[in-house]
Length: 262
Image 1 (spheres, rainbow, N blue to C red):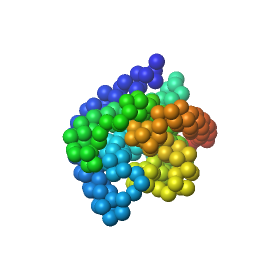
Image 2 (image 1 turned 180 degrees about the horizontal axis):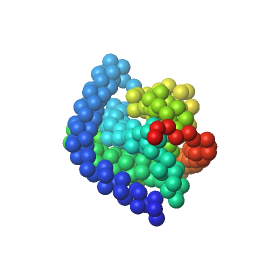
Image 3 (image 1 turned 90 degrees about the vertical axis):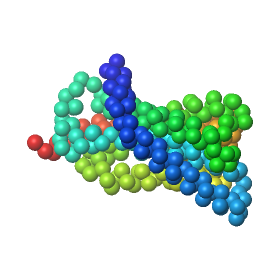
Image 4 (image 1 turned 90 degrees about the horizontal axis):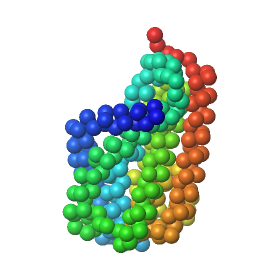
């Protein structure tokens, strides 16, 4: 019950940042249009095996849920650096679950606040420039659970980043490295569907591809609805592995933590 309370409080806190939401929407809309224009220019010179309509959808969905990828709990990082995390260690709750609920609420609400208006505007754009509904309604239905499992996976990755911060006390190095891996191997910098087939067989097994690439492929039809169960199993596998790794790292850090500051 305490974790659900933390979840609700963080949701309400995210609703207060309306100015940041508007700025984020405008920024991601701009980058979305630029990226689609670049891919259309690439296709004009050399058409690819993946239809440009699917690439446009891929770009817009990645931009719409960009907040889910890179949102971090800056308050927790500040507590680690200042030593105020010692107060949280006195709470009668599991600290990993406590902050997992916080980051999930932050990523969920931040994504919805930006994704809904962005996708509405992207649906208005002409075909090949914006987003269209999938040919099969099953593709849309299959993408929703995959997106939720991707959220669970990215929250687990974020808590692993925090675990490294507890050791180094500086989030910039490790967080920068993990964010670079996430953006590259999740398809945010370049859609994974445009990678060579031999590369895709390896990259799509990594946890980063489970965040947004897998749900988008179900939406666009790159993965048939019949492949949904296989996708869910792989995503669930990584959720369990990453949460298990994160919990073990947090527990180890708690035993040997040295609080900095006064």
